[in-house]
Image: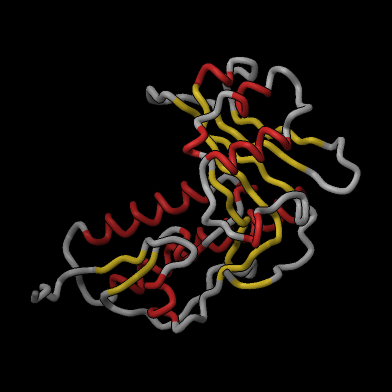
Length: 232
């Protein structure tokens, strides 16, 4: 089917983006920090012991590793669940064969095991979680030197994790992706024109690169990350 020439194609397919690989000739890489994450969701009632706010809860009882809960219970719209992230330093926990396609109950069960001795105010978050929502993740980041510049394609560009993956330690990954969409959408509102993609990417790098650097720096301190081990 013939595609009109004024179509702007956007790669927003995450850290393993096939669009990114083609567009950058695999020069834009995403690195494994070695830290590991379980992402989950629990009924709003499970958070009553915390109250309302943005919370970071760190377990320092382990002699050689560290686990941290990060969650946001500020509800601006009605929702049946709140999401959370349980993150651990490199080597704290993993999955068999490093298979991160494993989701659901195995991930939920591991999160319960890791937090079995936590305070009663926190236990419902894990005990009552929606098992189907749990997922293992590698804590990944783009190069902590920032989002690199390169030759722009006039009709194809990238947004979100496909161009600037960042750790959850900065708390700005989703907001940065949404800003990408807002900036690009604003530029496209009047229709495509020469230079639009280059202008978008220039503006995107101005705020995304500092966010990548900040998120990596915070993750390094919180999770004892000393090196980026391999590309994802």
